[in-house]
Image 1 (cartoon, protein in one colour):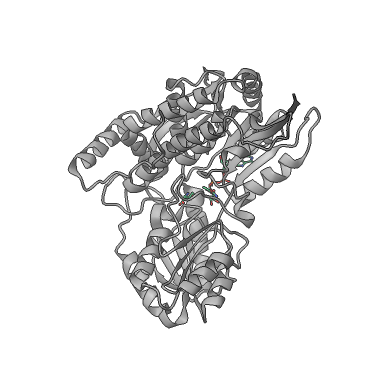
Image 2 (cartoon, rainbow, N blue to C red):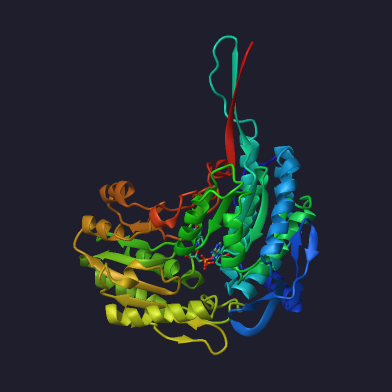
Amino acid sequence: MVQPYKHEPFTDFTVEANKKAFEEALRKVEAELGKDYDLVIGGERVSTEDKIVSINPANKNEVIGRVSKANRDLAEKAMKVADEAFKWWSKTKPEMRADILFRAAAIVRRRKHEFSALLVKEAGKPWKEADADTAEAIDFMEYYGRQMLKLKDGIPVESRPNEFNRFFYIPLGVGVVISPWNFPFAIMAGTTVAALVTGNTVLLKPASATPVIAYKFVEVLEEAGLPAGVLNYIPGNGAEVGDYLVDHPRTRFISFTGSRDVGIRIYERAAKVHPGQIWLKRVIAEMGGKDTIVVDKDADLELAAQSIVASAFGFSGQKCSACSRVVVLEEVYDQVLNRVVELTKQLTVGNPAEQSTFMGPVIDQSAYNKIMEYIEIGKQEGKLMTGGEGDDSKGFFIQPTVFADVDPQARIMQEEIFGPVVAFTKAKDFDHALEIANNTEYGLTGAVISRNRFNIEKAREEFHVGNLYFNRGCTGAIVGYQPFGGFNMSGTDSKAGGPDYLILHMQAKTTSEMF
Ligand SMILES: NC(=O)c1ccc[n+]([C@@H]2O[C@H](COP(=O)([O-])OP(=O)(O)OC[C@H]3O[C@@H](n4cnc5c(N)ncnc54)[C@H](O)[C@@H]3O)[C@@H](O)[C@H]2O)c1
Ligand SMILES: N[C@@H](CCC=O)C(=O)O
C-alpha cells in the first residue's frame, strides 16, 4: 500500500556523516564534468554539432557539460514521436504511471547528494539550497503519484433512478514543458511528471543554463521504467525551438515556468489557432514576482530581520518568491533596517561548493549585468546601506545589497531584479503598508510579520498574492503543504504541489447511461 505523503526531510549538514557524504558526491560530480549529452527522442540518443555549453557560474572556466541542441527539424521529429506515443500511453493504467514516479523518487532519494552536488556545480546553489531543490523534486514525484491515484476514478456525481452518471478525467495530448534554471531540478521534474502521470506525453525543453541536471532526470525516469517516446528531451534555443513548439498545431498544452515577458509571449502565441489545429491550447504559466515583506509596528523585530535576510538573499535572491521589497511601519523602520544591514554584512559570499558559503554566484553574465544595472538605478532611487559591488572575474558574484528610503513606485520597487537586492520603504500605518505591498503588477508571494491578530486577518483578505505567509519569510513553499503559484502577472495561479494541479493536465468527461 502507498504510504501517506510526507515531504522529504532536509539534510542536516552539521552531522559529520552527512557532510562527508556530500563532499564525496561533489567529488564524484567533479570527476564527471565536461561530458557530452545527447538529445533523447523516442528513446534514441541524438547528437548534434551545435552544443549548449553548460558552465559553473562560480567558475566560468569549468564546463559542466556540452549538450546537444535541438533545432526545428529535431523538434518536429520529437513532436511526431510524442504524438504517436500518446495513442498508447494515454491508455495505460494510472497506477502504472504513478508507480513509475514512486520508483523514480526512490532512485533520486538513493542518489540524493549526487543530484544536489550537480546543482551546486551547474546552478551555483549552496549546499542547503541544492539539498532543498532535490528534496522538492522527490516531493513532486511522491505527491503527484498519490494525487493521480486519488483522481483516477473521477469524482462521484448524482444520478437519478435508472440513470448512471459518471465524471472522470482523461489526458490532453502532447505537452510542451518549458522550465527555468533557478529550480533546475524541482520545477523541471515537477512540471514534467505532472504531465506524464496524467497520461500525456512530453517534450521537455529545459533552461539553457541547466540542461545537464535535466538530462540526468530523463535517465532516472528511463531507469524507473518510463517507456521510450513518452518523454523527449530537447534542449534548445527558447526563441527557436520554444516558439516552434508553442505554435505547433499538435501541441495540446504548454507548461511554462519562467519570466513574465516570455510567459506573456507564450500565452499570446498559444491563443492563435493554426491550420490543422482542432483544440484550444491550454497554458499553465508560472511567472515572475516582486515579493514584499510587511513589518508591523508590534512585530517580533528579530524575526522580521531574519526572515527578510533569508528571503532576500537565499540563492542570491534568484527565486520568484524572493523578498525584494520591505515595507516597515515608521515606528520600527530604523530598527528593522539597521538589523537587516547588520545581518546582511555577516553573510558569506563565495564558492557554493564550500559548506560555509551562504550565497553563491548569480547564474550568468547577462544576469550579472542586469543586476548590476539595477544596483546603479538603486543608487539613484534610494540610499545604499550595504553591498552594491560585484566581481565577475572568475564567477558571477554580487554582494547582498540593501537600499533604504525607496519610493514605492521606484523601478527597483516595481521591476523583478532576480538578484540579491532588497529595497526598504516606510509606511505610516498598516493600511498604508498593504496598499504599498499590493501596488505591483505581480502577486506571487508576500509575508506579514505582526503580533496583531486584526492586522493578520486584514492582510489575509487584502494582501493580494498567491502565497501569503505570516510570521515567517516568503520563500520555501513545500509540495503538498503550501501549494505554490501567483496572481496577476505572476501567472495563471496553477498552484504547483497542490490538490488542483494535476487537473490542469487533463480534461473532464461526463457519461450518462439509462438502465
Ligand atoms: N512562478 C513560479 O513558480 C516561478 C518559478 C521559478 C522561476 N520563475 C520565474 O522565472 C524567471 C527566471 O527563469 P528564467 O530566466 O529561466 O526565465 P526565462 O523566461 O528567461 O526562461 C524560462 C524558459 O523559457 C524558455 N524560453 C525563452 N524564450 C522562449 C520562447 N520564446 N518560447 C518558449 N520558451 C522560451 C527558456 O529557454 C527557459 O527554458 C524569473 O522571472 C522567475 O521569477 C517563476
Ligand atoms: N517554490 C519556491 C520558489 C520557486 C520560484 O523560484 C519557493 O517557495 O520559494
